[in-house]
Image (tube, rainbow, N blue to C red; front, side, top):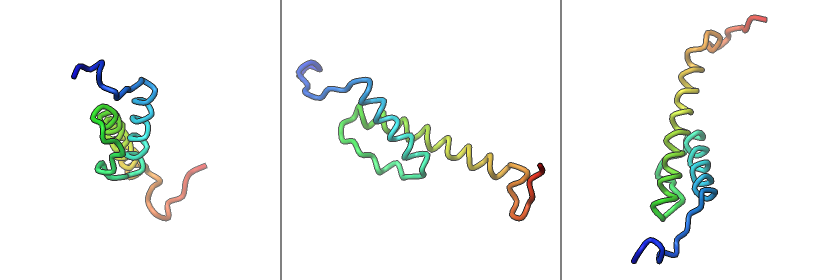
Length: 78
């Protein structure tokens, strides 16, 4: 079966949406195995988003842990 015969169609919009959903899942700390797509192309877009979101979540957590005013009881300067 050729690619044209395949009834599965993916648009840029649908792949962008899959990526965004994956990004939000990664950012929220959801496990990668919560993948909501069975088809490989949208699943790959979702997974790429998840990887990016998880990376951003980790960077944000590291930044919070390194900030000078992050210690409990520390007062912020005006």
